[in-house]
Image (cartoon, rainbow over all chains, first blue to last red; front, side, top):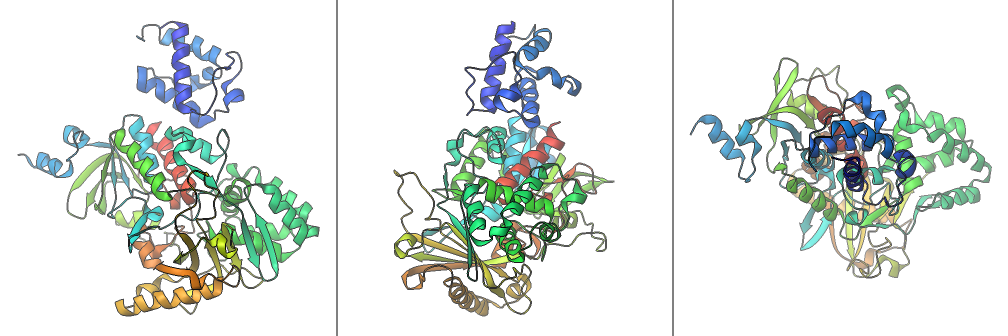
Length: 85
Length: 484
């Protein structure tokens, strides 16, 4: 997966977790928490959805890497390099 | 056929039966009420093999429904609390919708018109906007308004209370804030009525939860009542591959050493599971483990009710009654305990009209007027009545409870065309909680742990009550112990 494809995956997961949030103006360099008020339960969901959909496991100590879209995509770029779309 | 296969065939008639394939569930959930269904959805969504066991013939637990004289009745639901409007990102309602992947519209909640706390000569109206309650306190108790703001500030952080702070006395805390005892009683009345398992006093943590859910967020109801919510939950659970077994009471929880490994049903079937979630209640769950050292166990709750339901030949609004819920108490002190001498204590009660919600105009109002009236009752006295007397007493207390209620709302008795009464024994049948205790045991096990590994509590005795609360309980226990 390319970074752009990973971004789409994350957008897709976010729209599932938070169907009432408008994600069209989501800024990649600002934390999710500030923009769509994700709490720790929601972050667990991003992790679980990645595991469910792509078998990507993220250890608990890496959760802070998922703070914003930019940091999430760069963190996942290596992990999901060989994952098919 | 081998024994195990035969057993599995008996268990499974759904096309996708996990048990047949592996002989082991990831999670077995006891009780298909709100918390069990919510936990089941979370776990099935993340591909767990889940089996939900329900003792009764239908789902819902306390928040179930039934048909009587060709009419639909709800058991538990007066109101869904914690109402927030569409688009809200904060609060428990938004959180459970996200966690269960529902859209706001799927719960179809219509907000309340407005409610009231009625004491002799003093009334406090409130709605889903806190400002109304604040102005009512200003009107009735002008010296207490600043103190009310102090209370609000103290409640901000209630989410983070540990068990010691959680169980502090609410009466003591409120008496330290307010100098008008009557206001303390009036604030306690609706919050105890809708979520206090403890007699006389209330846990401070529970008070905070109820204050937020009722005064800061507020009441709502789907036009179709609790059925709509249950239908959505069970449909989703099944779509995700979850199994649901009705009429399947658990006889015992199977243990190996200090760990739970499965359950045995009343009919002898055994199901094995890696984790077991029980919404049966703390005392009831320990009994299923054959573990009952009386001195160590907290006791079951005592607060249970009768519900007198009246069907009217008109809308309550036609009689001048447009309030959603009226919490009344006929003296200055709010007495919250099991009746001492009789089947019921009618000094206080809750009058709810499902007609008085702001339904979408295209739905109109409910076809018939309904007034539901809840009164405190004594489980033992109701249980001990022989059959003919039980029926007679139901009717007698229906009349008496209405007589008490019409002191606080327009007299609707001449417009009643049908009625039903359910009692603590009915509640016991639906919830399987000891004493028909509506809000479970007074002691809450906030972390959901039990004496046994792999066995966790969810639902009423874990700490959250009400529809939104019990759904939240199922979600959080599933997240904490079955998904991480």
